[in-house]
Length: 249
Image 1 (spheres, helix red, strand yellow):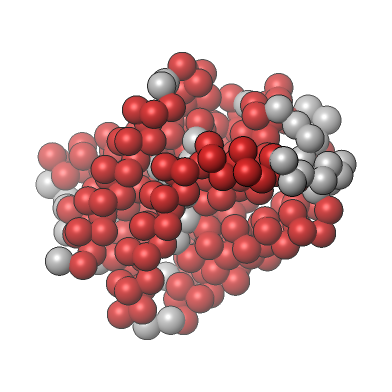
Image 2 (cartoon, rainbow, N blue to C red):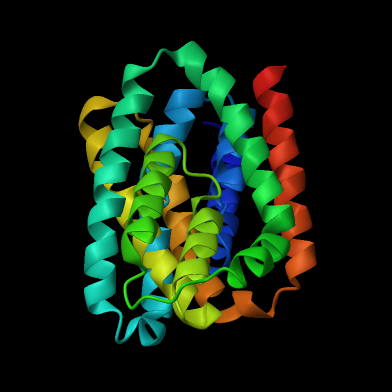
């Protein structure tokens, strides 16, 4: 990377870390940025995944007050996240690179739709909610599926988790978001360990994303709640469209 490219990846890491702490979908910033500076899709994906782990840590620390009282629940759901992440990471490495180029634009498009329609989806699910202290078996399976998605690609896994947790748990949004941050961190950290040993990783890119996401995760946990939600959603969707165009062009 040139110094300007490294600066761009670092800046994208800051934005991704902040967005992941507040909403999710930070990979819709870092992933297309890494594509734009010339990384192959799979190298960009695995390097991005590893680099976002420090941002996940600072985001979780920023929400530690909201995590109180959720230990047993998150131990149960964390198992699903870890298993799902391993399965998704293996799929990423086993499937041919051509499959990734086909699948990821579809995943990004779905993620963008989830971002746009998240409020309506949550309203629709809320009236069908069946409260359970730990969410019940359906939430466990949903978190398993979100973990597989996160291990394979990861963009908008936070949006998926917020929708699932908010629908199956009788908790306020801030506690749901805190749980989402921890489960997302488990998914990314699990996949990162797998990728570090057996996947093509660009460690210079990992360093830039890691430094940026650590700063962004801290800022996002402290300040991100003040951002206007419509503006944030619009920004994520624009970045997602850029990623799709980049992948299919």
